[in-house]
Image 1 (cartoon, rainbow, N blue to C red):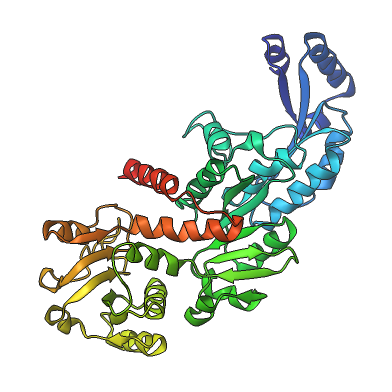
Image 2 (image 1 turned 90 degrees about the horizontal axis):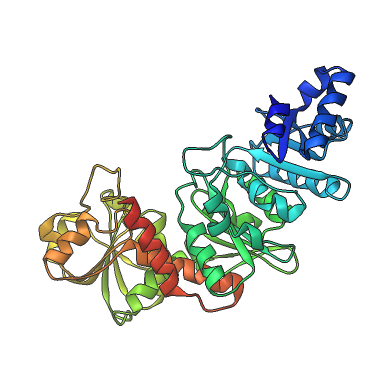
Length: 421
């Protein structure tokens, strides 16, 4: 079959190493001679569908047959597995045409960075739904999103880490920003189940910075060489930057995501602001707004949690049944109510919407039930998309030292969200 493929014009054929080992010497010699006669290259491959281990031994098994290309494929169970694949590529790329890939969502790093490490090529699917292996992405994604053909040794690598992470719009937003500002950098989604795994990749790849999601925002704090004051106060860090000294520094840009959109529309000092919820997103909003001099009221279905957050942030707490009796300059929803897939659509009753401006941190869908209600009342609104972009813009500034192209970041995120809806 492979000989016929070569005669039909295939430039390269892939023979699994087990088949090469089972073939008789004379049979294999005739096969290789036939390929040479029609100018087809021979690639001998090894695949491990369960783990990443013994890559060097696999490469040696393949090299014994003196093929034109050596292909070693494993399965990534951790982010650190990518390091083993990239090391194999670096070690063998000078002596042979080598291809190395770790399959699975955790192995995307190896797919994108393999050619940068010296791999002859990488694999991608021609279209969505046409993948030939777990974790494979489309050729369009490789070229347009990750700019595969432009990556070199000077390219700085960033990531957004969590589990799940495939839905994240951060790679799209940041990669478009890097392209717009001619920054030689790329952001990759990093699926990880443990902080130790992420930190191994940060230190050994190394990574220039990482956007981290829950629960890593709290777990990473003891590993930081230093952190900004807001991170220390809030007790959560969503942005890591690796310094020239190799140490990891922490920042919280979730606060900027709340403060910046509001600053554009009102004077925060002395403003009365109601915050619905008492979780991680609420902490960033409450601490950040109190620091700006706002009078902040925390409202939560479990009132004790609202009281606890208010005490820590020097804010005030308000029982849900008191909401309708008060007026506010702004009301911020930090709960998941209204998010796609969440059954409870409204975080408050219609008669409790006593604010001049409504800010919903939920950004999928773009037009949440709460924002639709505010629109119908003629109130000013801020969508969660604006918060997402503003926190990302602050990350871009921390990582690059350049002003963020906010309009471009907003444009690509809005387009992606509208396509999803």
